[in-house]
Length: 525
Figure 1 (cartoon, rainbow, N blue to C red):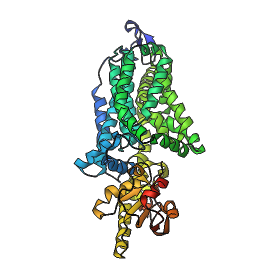
Figure 2 (figure 1 turned 45 degrees about the horizontal axis):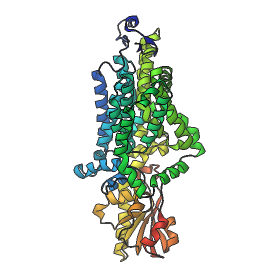
Figure 3 (figure 1 turned 90 degrees about the vertical axis):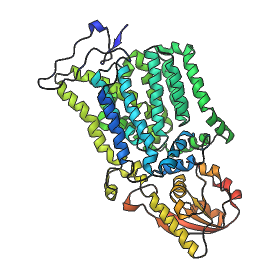
Figure 4 (figure 1 turned 90 degrees about the horizontal axis):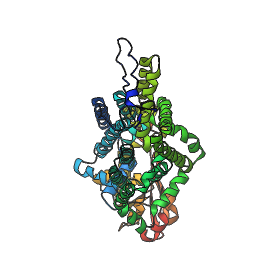
């Protein structure tokens, strides 16, 4: 039986070559004979890197504020269901922790931080399966912990953070089942896939691409056994409640998918997509990432992972290039393979010490350059000076308490004038979520919106006699006799957020009640 070496070439234990001698006076980067797939444990530095990763994420989690999606998920978590217009129920369910720990960003971000730390450890486990030595396993953890994609997703309470972990677990279980001939690991893959499907329907895309990858390689014979299909059955059972909810509500996620395609398929997105995907591990890590993909492709037993990754990238670039992170769930696999390729490159060089330093520096420098746009580390008063902030998600975590205060001030002013609003209508789910979650002490009237699941929730018994309007005057004007602007809201500190310059106004004289108007106010996106 052949063994895969870090260089990706089969050899026998007896014929394995010794590592090159270390440089004088320097710690060697050992490249011993490659272990068999899955043999060996994880060295202590892997756990240290994962722990530091989690500690840093939590240390900065309370700076700036919530992201709009997090506020929306908190609201959805208080109205638990088997599904929502724009996602399955897992992410809103996880935000219920805020009811125990209080409404603050850190409470929402505990689970994402822990998920990110787990992904770092899983990357090292992939390195073990790929034949890495001790140093290669540590490097896989370092590359993953410094990958801007992983750092960004582990900071926010979105569907992507548990989704990234679920993808990693599915791929780890499948790879272990195939390389080590342990068919029961398919059951673990099915369990992780089912949980992943309750977080994000993109898991279905991974399963399709993974099946094609297996079918196109020498592993295809496993598809003729019962284990993969038993795992698929487990996933289907776990996913069934969400599928039933979608069917009962007219499959709204299909409408959402179409809307997202329209919003994220601009020419600019198509041009930037390939570079963005390559840079998910950091700009300086791109050569290693390419080498890792090539190594997967050239290793017959691992080629199914290369095909899976390639199919995901092709799909995203073709259908929704503005959401390139949809293709990056295979990050731990590619970064682990990159670590093994780096080991081989270091061992072949005449100056292994220099190569080793370059490999370690690449992720560290890349994350140092990227971190101001993905973590709240810059003092907020100087945040507007950060380059490319207008395209960074960090900017949208600033200003939600101030928006809530601005709306509450207009409500109080109208109430003092004897015209207290009877409901609030927001144009975006994030704005509505902020008012619902952060405005409880201001005694605001019912908050409504036609955006995403707020439309499903409907107007309830809210009155439409006097409506305070946030970012939706143009939307409501056709249905009210009088609408006017009261003020405009700007995010503090001149932060270039997507939610700055919002009009706050009031509408009176509805042409019909909310129940009659509601079908016309639906908006997905």
